Length: 228
Ligand SMILES: Nc1ncnc2c1ncn2[C@@H]1O[C@H](COP(=O)(O)OP(=O)(O)O)[C@@H](O)[C@H]1O
Ligand SMILES: Nc1ccn([C@H]2C[C@H](O)[C@@H](COP(=O)(O)OP(=O)(O)O)O2)c(=O)n1
Image (cartoon, rainbow, N blue to C red; front, top):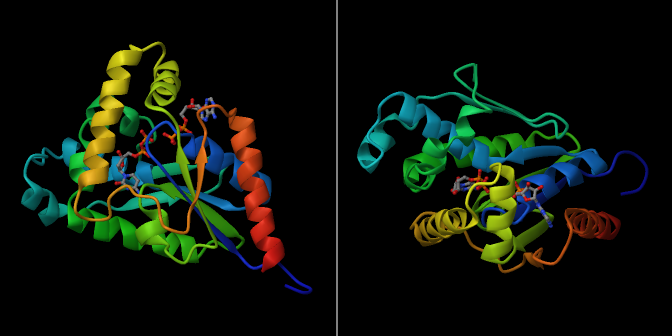
């Protein structure tokens, strides 16, 4: 664009757990002055609400019936992202094992996805300078017209080692099994499964440092901006 502010840029980053989506997206957004949205945190938040309110997670119709009830608010500043449910800060409780083990079942329910997808689109379109949105179905379903789509991958071993490092030495073998189980559930659900969009750039992060991945994505965004 000539003169004036750059057009808001929309970047979609998808991939399975432990590939570096959150760390990369936050850093890229901070470096480029963009907003940042962790859509996994939103699915975790609605799962936390279902668990807290005693909804039967095994019963998709029970989940669907109350999917519209919780009010989920995401703060999109990459230097301090926030998430609340009905005004309660849930940043910590959404990371518990209890939520992690049930999030795939809740997020497979179409009514849950419709609700959260609508919220994500409204956040993305109102980001003044643009946004980096990370998740599982951003490039395929939520923002199919994103300016840039990235699909991060890494070997299950690398992902499990990264995750167990975060969980203060949790057993790598059981972490790997839990990751693969969640990948399978997220990839096989009927509504907007985890998938690479045809026009996404795939980046295998197995042998890359986090800094190298960040630099790679920043370069891709800058190239897109220069071409606009
Ligand atoms: N390329 C990388 N090399 C080593 N560790 C990484 C890399 N990318 C991310 N990590 C680390 O792995 C962990 C999981 O990363 P995260 O960004 O939360 O992944 P995701 O959002 O895809 O689940 C974090 O502790 C992060 O610092
Ligand atoms: N766009 C998205 C983002 C996450 N989900 C679901 C499926 C994921 O297993 C859970 C949790 O996602 P999250 O990104 O927090 O998971 P990790 O922290 O990478 O392990 O939410 C989804 O269905 N669609």
